[in-house]
Amino acid sequence: MPSEKLISLLRTFSKPELNRFRKYLQSPYLNDQPDVLRLFEMLNDRLRKAAENERDFDKKYVWQQLFANKAFDDLYLRRLASDLTQLALQFMVAEARQNDPLSEALELQQLLGKQELKKHLAGVERLIDKHLEAAAGKSTNYYYAQFKKHIQTFNQASKTVSTAGYMDRLLPADYYLECFYIVQKLKLYVGWLHFRGTRATDRTMEVFPGFWEYIASEKFADVPIIAVYQNMIACFTEPEKEEYFREFLADLNRFAKTLPEEDLRECYQTAQNYCALKINQGHTEYYSVFFNLIKDTIQWGILLENGQISEGVFKNTVTIGLRVNELEWVETFIRTYASFLPSGIRENARTFNLANVYSHQKKYDQVIELLRDVEYSDLVYALGAKLILLRTYYETDELMAMDSLVDSFKIFLRRNQVMSKGLKREYSNFLLFLKKLSTIHPSNRPAAEKLKKRIQETSHVMSKKWLSEKVTELIEVRSEK
Image (cartoon, rainbow, N blue to C red; front, side):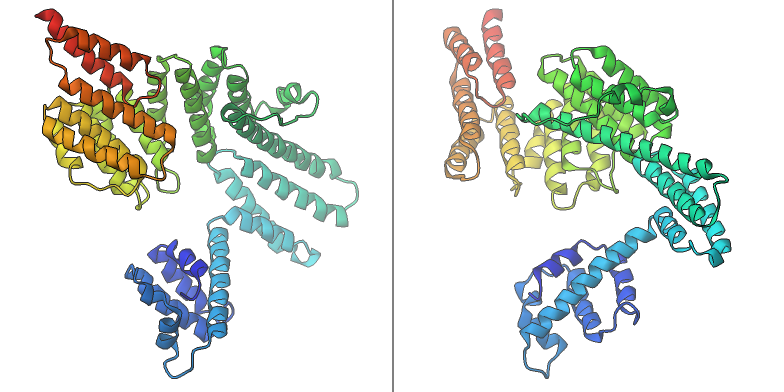
């Protein structure tokens, strides 16, 4: 192909973006090479048809379509592809600027600093104030924009004005710079705490002496995000003091309407991370807290990011919903939000998670219907689907189908070169125990007791809780008789 970088970049453009990029390339001011536009038109046609055939992007084939009567010139084609790539990147910058009118106005403020352009400058500064007033919450970027506005006003005034009003222009710039620095520093500090909580490190993030006392001063009382992040940090530096978490949640409720979407989403993700930490420590009551936080993100409209839901958030939502037995809610969630997953994993995620819900609802026929003939390209979904299907076959007494899947699963584990030895062991132990479980007669209580003991003593086994429940059911059936 002319350039793998170019093709991969253009694949990320939506159809409306491709249309706007064509107009961008048609401007002589931006692009004075007709051949670059012709190359784009050809590639655009194939991308819109979702071409996957190697020939569609073969260099010589592309050249023949563009220059049928000219000898192949690899160097010229590569130059065209390189120029088109650079124009595509410049287009992305132009699109981003167009979607950020505040930054554009701040750039204009700087450019209009000449004395003879004072009337134009006044209009732009009014526009900046209008954008700042309309800002959805006070984010890190909000404080940086305020700083830029005030420092540029100060710089322009200092060139032409005496000391009159000097401090009125200087102090606001200093205040907003401090706000920007503090908020950004707190965000970075939270990132370091998260890293420290999951990985061993002897490196630390320093703050200047007196930092924590300084940011707690009245000076920053009207900067809500600082208070929110202080309690957030306290949650992870002293996780055993749960009152910090309660204060953090109270701050979230109090300031949710004043925080921008990006920061509010990050705060809720951090609260969920705290719940996960407490759950891992054995505090299972935090499952319901976690679930309520998820519902809050839906209520505040921050579950989706850039119009999508990440695979991790989708899966966690389903998992937590199932743990608190909100089965109908989870099923509705899957049907509502699966369409917002990235297209590459959408169908895998939808089918697997829906089957998982049906399994919990004991709708075993629907589980089998969903999973029996599905081949998953993603290893995680492939393993999870086989696990659900095996449990379903056991529950429905489809032992021949279960035995067949056990045998094919063993071969799958043996041949797979990607899975770790530890993970293979967990699945192998599950298959071993499932096979033994299916062969124990309800009248053979000693065998059931022995199997239960082995399952409990085995550290590495998948679906250990389910296996324990099933063998306990065998023992209880014998006891009732």
